[in-house]
Amino acid sequence: MSPFDMASIALRSCSSPTSTSLHSLTRNDFLHRQQRSPCFIPYAIKCNLDEPLKLVNGRPSVPVLNEQTLPNFLHSKRLEKSVNGSNTRLKLFSGLANPSLSQEIAWYMGLELAKVNIKRFADGEIYVQLQESVRGCDVYIIQPTCPPANENLMELLVMIDACRRASAKNITAVIPYFGYARADRKTQGRESIAAKLVANLITEAGANRVLACDLHSGQSMGYFDIPVDHVRCQAVILDYLASKNIASNDLVVVSPDVAGVARARAFAKKLSDAPLAIVDKRRPGHNVAEVVNLIGDVKGKVAVMVDDMIDTAGTITKGAALLHKEGAREVYACSSHAVFSPPAFERLSSGLFQEVIITNTIPVTEKNYFPQLTVLSAANLLGETIWRVHGDCSVSSIFQ
Image (cartoon, rainbow, N blue to C red; front, side, top):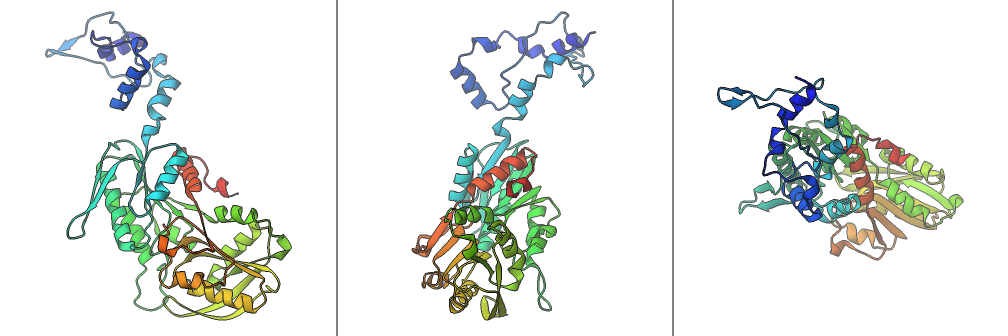
């Protein structure tokens, strides 16, 4: 039996009297079928049998086709694209932590957010049900673990578990802000390393990949036993600062502590290779900062303070006060993550800063807005990264 005859037997169902030729379908009928059934193949082949089916125990016997016997007409690139390359293979889900950012990402990508039902039981337990099929799909769950950190983290874990049990092909946790990132090492005896614990939880829940923004320290990527794509939202801030047309010889980039020197140096290099200054800080307790002195010259210059996050704003405001004392003309504060725990609002709006520039990886509540605050969107950057991960393209080339 020839390969064409074997294919004809395998495709017996497509020549049934009830089937409709593709050419007899109107565009509305075609779209209706495609929306109704994700398995509908618009380029189905109508074929006639040259010989009757062989019956075994009263049932038709269909030969198994392999790559060697499969006819060339079934290897259509157009068919392959319509079935495997369809956007229905990529699903974007949003948690409740930052739905506005998720909506912006979906808008950039030209997709709709997939439907999911998330609610709380009377005792506070989290319930998640996916409202559409994800079988065989690449799923991206957008959920920062921002305050309330434990609630949002647990919601992310339950969403990952729901996708895994629904037979998703790949699950990527898109975490614009990774909570517990500061607990990345032991500074005293008998402390936990919560960053590693959270990484284990996300992995065990069923995630195949993590996409995170501006982690507190690079070593956190090593806590995951799955691939991690590290997105640097500072690129968005750099573009904004470049639009302000500040003379390069007037700029100085300031690290608010010694731990952030590498981050500030990389930022300064991309900002016309500006000089670097460092605030020497001591931290006698959690969320308590004590400034000692300044390393570098800021007199008569525009100082740009760079940090990965602003929590209570104690570090950055004390650093700004020192910069003004040392003769800085203007002080800008730049940060990817605006945690803004009290009393951050009062400190940042005290008049020390010309402008406070942040991104929307964490939603900013209305009560935390003040005149000097500028919120930039990281949605385009995250959307482009998701497209590249989905298409197996380079992510690092975005930041070069």
